[in-house]
Image (tube, rainbow over all chains, first blue to last red; front, top):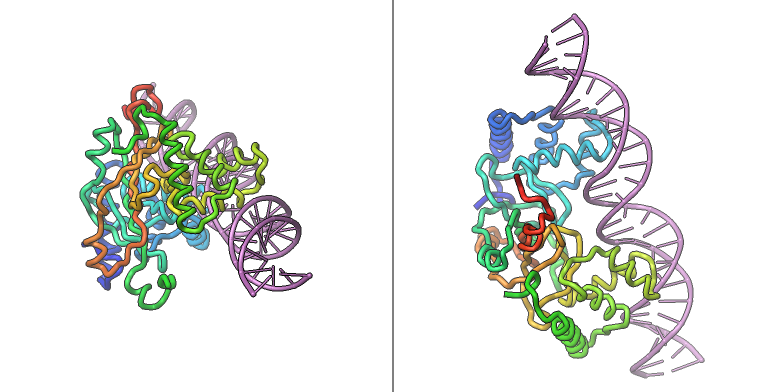
Length: 160
Length: 160
DNA sequence: ACCCCCTTGTTATATTATAACGCCTGCGCT
DNA sequence: AGCGCAGGCGTTATAATATAACAAGGGGGT
């Protein structure tokens, strides 16, 4: 099980993600530029999903460009290369919790705090896809709900 | 297996979805107003996902209001009550293929023609969620790819 | 008659995302 | 050195998706 909602050594988390990204870029001839690296660091600060415009605001405050394409391109690079993932249910982005190892990610997504736990599960739907002659290119698996911290703190107002 | 990409009697498809919606509304005290009913009919015309603004354009052409909330509210009603589903990966909406029976839907979503096949699979992630104390409220399971018709017709340009 | 809830409509604005172009740099080539 | 090219970053402008907030009307209950 990947962490996300549990307490853990987050510094190690950040360090290993960054060094995995560096290694992957070096190995594949990709440029981990200051902008891209900083974007990844921003995502890595927490396990919460950030909107592209949240990331953009951070980048702008640090002297990078201020227009949407700056953030979208950096995020696109990270997502395309597996260093980050897009959470469709939130239209937001989160750092990859398993950098380096190729994987079909799936997520527990808290609607209270937007934190995300990344899990590795066997791909569902494969037999159905095959029966239909459908070529799967990407799986989106997101469980939306409330993490235990949010339920306890009343964030997201439990259903009556 | 639900249809979606295969040939089938679509007229029966539409009729059964509409009568299931009528029955569910009658049973639950919901109002299937002309706007809501027409919105469902528009979604039912094909198994392709439609954007809210596509639906809005159709509604407006038929004399309904022309502003986004008109479409978003009708779609919200249909989605809330299980008569339609939102496809997160497309930011679009599709009629439910299994109206009446409660289900956690999952989808094969073609990026060539936007058609959607709705499948019923066992919820993944349940054990992981439990281990984290995470309360799942909704599962999003979408396999994105190309249907056989699109692959054969070259739509979506096969990977080189 | 009156009230209340629900539905539909509006105006206005927020949020998310991409197209298209220019500049600069680093790199390979001659 | 000089040239050309590709990639990255920045811009302007606009597209696409979504919601907040308020007004008007209808229909049922008392």
